[in-house]
Image 1 (cartoon, one colour):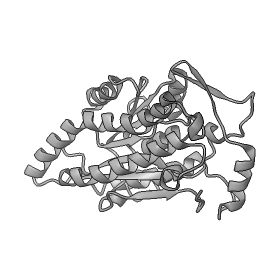
Image 2 (tube, helix red, strand yellow):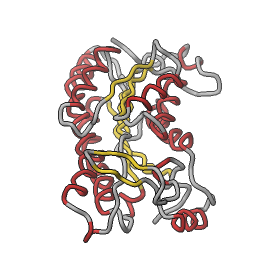
Image 3 (spheres, helix red, strand yellow):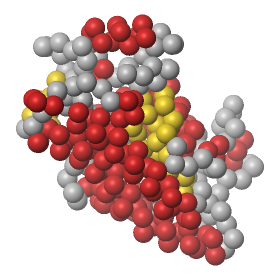
Image 4 (cartoon, one colour):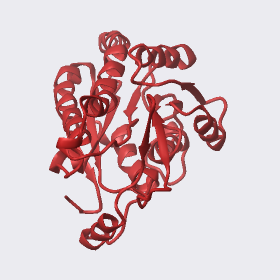
Length: 290
C-alpha cells in the first residue's frame, strides 16, 4: 500500500506546501495542551490521527474539538503500564491499517532537588519520558520494518516519521528537575540511535526540545493551584512565578511560547519538508536556555 504524496494531494490544504492525506499518525498525551495542538495540526494537514491520553474526559474533548470522526480516533490508557504502549500501536493499526507518524509527546514533571527526590519519583520520570517511547517504538517496529521492505522491493520510497519530545531541561539541565532532565536527556540518545537503526527503512527520527510553553505545567505555582493524580500521588503543577518572570526577561522573544507554536515545530518533522533530516534535535524555546 503506497501512502506516498502526490502533486494533487499537495494542493489540498490551502497555504501549506504539503499534504499528509493518506498518512496515519499516533500522538500520545493529546488530551490537552501541546499534544492537542499537535493532533490538530496533523488533522488540518490531512492526516488520520489516533490520540492517546490518561485522562478520558480531556481526550474526548480533544476528539470533539478535532471534529473529524472519519480521521480521528482515540484510545485511553496509562502509558506507564507495560501493556499499554503495544495496545495503542495495535489499536492504531486495527483502526487505520497503518502507522506513518509517531509523536511521543506524553509527559509531566514531578520536581525536586536531588536530596529530596525518591527512587519512585526519579523512576516515574524515566518511565514516562524514556521507557514509554521506547516501548511504543519497539511495538511499532515490526510493522515499520515489514512495510518498508515491501515498499523498497517495489521501488517505492515511503518516508515515515518519529518525533520524540525533549526539553531544554534535557539539553541544558535545570535545578530541581533531576528526574525530568534525565528522562529528557535520555530520549535524545534514543532518538539518535534509532535514526541510525531505521534509516534503512526510510524513517526520519528526530526530536523537538521545548523551552517554556504556556500550558498548565508552567502556570504560576501556588498552594491552591492545579494538581494531577498519578499512581496515588497528588503532584503540584506549575513553576515558581519568579522563574516565569526571569524566563520572559531572559528570552530573546520576551515571552513564553504557545502550544500552537510548539506544534508547528513538530509538524515540520512530520512533513515531507524533513525527508532528508534525521537524528536531529530542534529547540523550540524562543532562544531561551537555562
